[in-house]
Image (tube, helix red, strand yellow):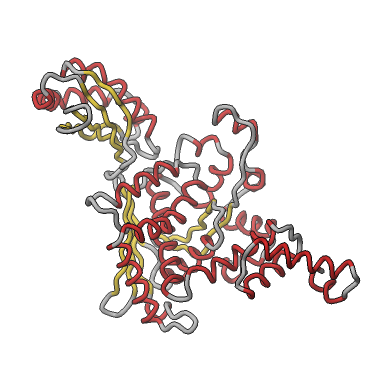
Length: 437
């Protein structure tokens, strides 16, 4: 049964888990991994000096149709309104056929800095003359990757003419890492090529590491929101559509706005990347560098209208994620969440993530272009404030509602209201009793 028909958000957590188990074929062990998360013993094998684990909320975004397939999307995030916003925008996109997404070949870039050269231009030509030899050597470094169809694809050499240390060379190894994120494979290949490169150039290989500006490994998504789906409250559809486009135009023209605009995209992207046990810091670095690739920081997404007046959205960015290896192998919840999404490859995972980023971008733009970002966001934030002030049980929602109605979502006001309620209750005030019952 579709989640929207059963009002997933009204279910208890055990009921939600049972529903997910039925939808995605999760067994009792899978559900326990979601409940328990990461153990301290498991954490001790993942990082140095482990002392515990740190929990974040795990939710599920609904309504996503990606390349014609229904997808339940897990999101790990502490910020209110993100999961709800992405789910509702996915519902609007669903009316236009859902999201169409694709990913390029999983080619990562390994970089080698070569210094102490007699002449950088001569050294560059020597490396290019030995290109086939170096690629053949790189092809034998990882037999497993080679058997899976991965390995070196190209070798490029750049001259950095000016730097604080003078001119030097940068060698780029283009390396297909298949379904892995690829950092370990690329870094190993660069280390193994070092003696050959130094022998050819007579220089010294200094840094040898992958680049997180993975602009050869991009993902892209697009959607059409039918005009009739865009009406919102007192805002007619045309006004909402044009407001979204105008808000996007602001981000394309102004880096101060673009930073927050792209942060909204990353609210959706990062939440899924974390749930999938991938490196969200690498994704962030690549995304923001890509946004500035023209020399000016700008929007990662685009919004426009078609000849029928529908709203069109696109998003393209580097997305070097893996469905095997790393934390996806050792984190029990990450394994289950990949299963929940039905992920069969890194490309499919990237397609899901980029679609969620586009949905979350629309959620933010729609809110900004209509009622303002605070109204919906503050309603959910008020619950956090209520808990921080000491509210418990039924008090939480009652207090949150009052804070929102007063338009004063502050912890000092929340504490003041709680104090009044408890004082009334202790004095036997029946109205006070009702308030905290």
